[in-house]
Length: 116
Length: 112
Image 1 (cartoon, rainbow over the protein chains, first blue to last red):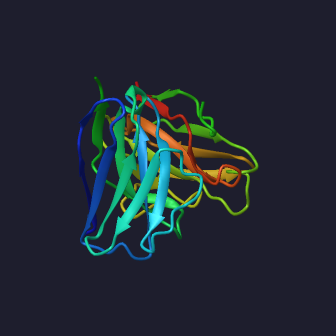
Image 2 (image 1 turned 90 degrees about the horizontal axis):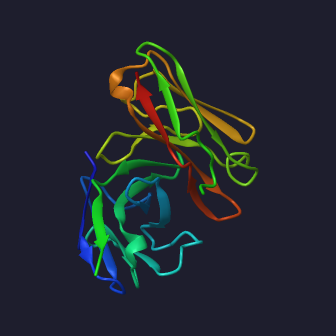
């Protein structure tokens, strides 16, 4: 059974870089897109971007965001530079089933708080 | 403000049928090549896929949940409402103009 396990720093100061990684267990990165979605406290879901196993990143990534994939470690990562309090949110990694065009598998979520 | 518009709240009593709407435009839901997916988020948990490709259910999702699409709008219907259905529900679709995925603002379903 494929599972996503994510990790990264949960407390940052303003201007620091958020770095999260999502490991894929029980399956391969191949033939899927892998994405990041965030949810500010009490608010809705916001898509941040997707990447496939070949490193292709879907366009329209917001500024300050970088998504990368490491096929040798079966994991993918999110970096968000120059964070502010507005970046405080739960960050989720997810698998995109391209054929179904939907996020069919989600990580457990990581709460990231930006505070001085 | 979300690109896809959902009512902020909905409610029903056990056994009732409830529908949640999701309104978009010609670049997302209304585009022939784009499909709608729906997600259920129970309190304190990650979202879970309920419906994909407008009206398909993943394995394990009860057939009480159904999806439909017409033009630039989509709907999620829940029949035989149960207390465990109390959750937030989100629609999503690809947007050709933004070249990215967009979510609705979410609908909080209360089972009275």
